Amino acid sequence: MPHTAPPSLPNDLDKRKQVSIIKCEATPDGWHAEGLAANPDKKAANYKIAVDFTNPEATLLASGSTSLDVDAEKDGKWEVREKFTAPKGTLCVLGPVS
Image (cartoon, rainbow, N blue to C red; front, side, top):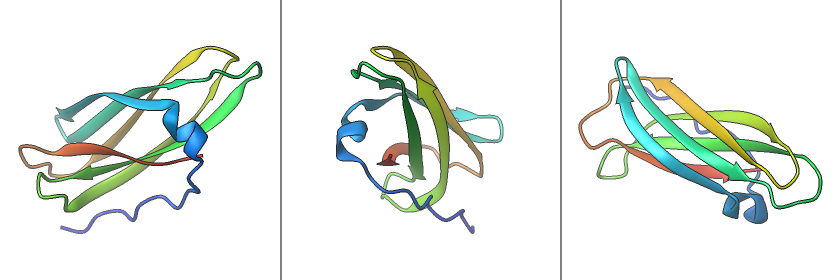
């Protein structure tokens, strides 16, 4: 099955440490990843977040990305949904964050 290419994002290691996946689950037509971006800074920040969906053997099935603005010293909720035939045991892997 063809998959979408992973998003081409630079990886900001400091921002990546502020992003977490809190939910990874099947949807009727694919898979869904959800998480938080915790902005510790005294000013608002924009986060671009990439997620890879893999099978249990780490084969890439699909990729997606999202972008969100998070106010100073706040958390922002994000989600990525992709439509694909997802096998049992599909995993959500945090990709680059910028």
